Length: 158
Image 1 (cartoon, rainbow, N blue to C red):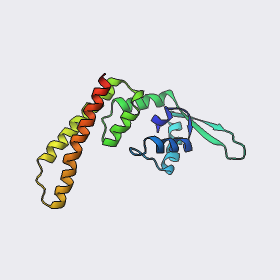
Image 2: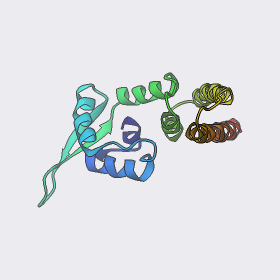
Image 3: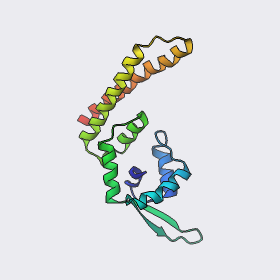
Image 4: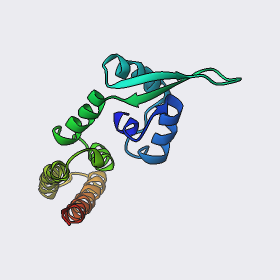
């Protein structure tokens, strides 16, 4: 959410719509989750809030990223290793908020994880036909991810 606020001031509704049009395949906050988190971000000093008066409609709360919020996004982008593929993709999506070197380190760390998974999958002898089908998925997915990681790394190294 902080990454989306880094793009500019937005209401909760606008944040939800922006997420749907940009990062929903990696992270799709529920409306209830979004509206519950926004006041906590303000309390924590990571976001600010102002009221915008509207004629004929309820007033709208517009949120903006604070300096502390921007620092928190940058810290997440640069230090925490991604726990999932979707988290890595989110980090790439918001990478304009961190250094190129930090993003390259994230890509390298995740490539190491993927290589480890691939080695584990290659050592498995599935016990059932259905196990073989899911193993085949992993054996095809990991090389595709590694290829994308390498391609992305080359692109960023230019």
